[in-house]
Image 1: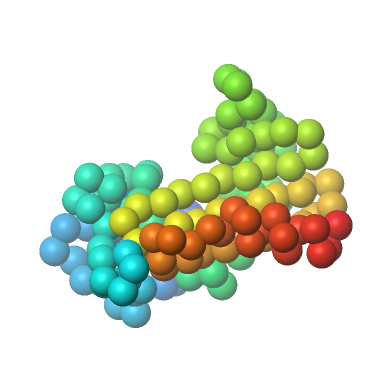
Image 2: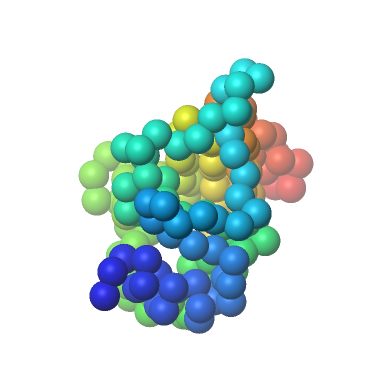
Length: 149
């Protein structure tokens, strides 16, 4: 089973993420966004399209299904979720920076930036997707968090 097949069968389909996909060479992605660097239209570099890093194409709406799954037992058991969010080195868990009562995850590639900020005890999650290389999603997420906390 390939990684894209695994993700479709075990993550996207069970979560109802029907429009989410994994990038595959020469396979068009419907309704996708492109990034910008200044006023120039850009796309991911070939190196950033590696599986697990820069290859998931989803919407903010479908990302909500992912977030809900992380906060419940839909994909992970309580034991696995605890392991997933437990820092193992320098406050870093499995893709998450963990400190005090919050976890965060950032990502970027040519023309795109993302930031997820979670306050699990408060059941507050802020997700910012930006398709501009000069965007600052972490700054915006923290400003939004200050309003709701």
